[in-house]
Image (cartoon, rainbow, N blue to C red; front, side, top):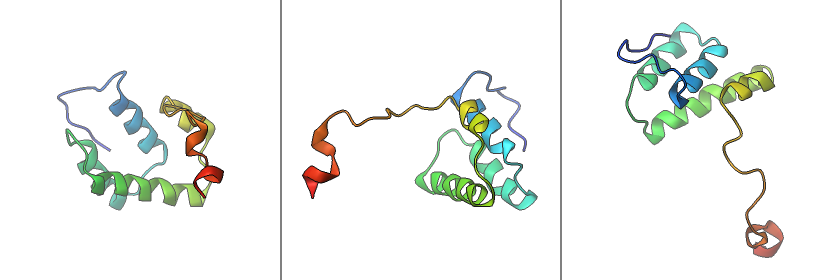
Length: 92
């Protein structure tokens, strides 16, 4: 996949995502869609949906390697809920 020459994207989330996407070795057909998304300055929900579909396809073919996830700088989200108020047992 190629990216615009205007920025090398070093040490940024975009750089991490690009490396993660490339680690799955997209097919030429997939690259057409992914290249368009990566080159944008912002993402739409349709773009996010395309990424989810791409990652889901790869995850069904073989498990996602822990090193690939580490390359993204994960975890970003907290691993525990901030309060018990959001637990399923209390909302049911």
